[in-house]
Image (cartoon, rainbow, N blue to C red; front, side):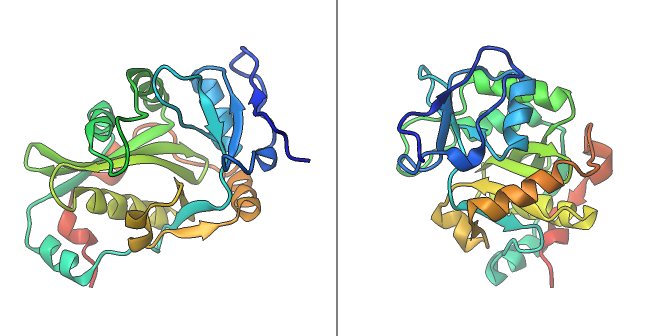
Length: 246
């Protein structure tokens, strides 16, 4: 039976979450409230298919919507026109060289239909801790020394949970997402969690995945051997044109 109120989390950072399958239908996916952004709590949440999403000054809200928006790592789509543009520019892609800068850029990026951002200073601090522990990662897109795009998220096992991306110049976020997906696909990682639907993600190839098969894939992937620690040397500094495809 669906609960009418979300589960209130205990104070201990290792306190268990309720099963994601018990999330509310309205609002879609609301599962729990309270707790904090301690790294252990965040890792437990993501491993269970759960993520925090709340506005500054509000209690922390934890979500697991149904269906989930995901990318297959071999399914990110760049338009033919954009790929042609990529072949002629000088952008380059790196990983884990400017994590906090990417987060802050995501926080300040304008979002259609949104007033403000959920990426508060407390969120930046919490995910920066995860980055220092080797579980949160960023891909950066550079025009020489200028950061023109990026994406960040959390990696556990062979599952990547995307959090946010930004464009400082048109197309910057597309390149960051394509580079992330191509890299993960090369490592044999199947999915990127994109959380909730928006038209931009759908145009780039995102799919709806019902909660049950999503959770099944997550619970398997997070048990697999992953790549903890910085990805900087694994990725190197790659011309963005390499992600333009044929």
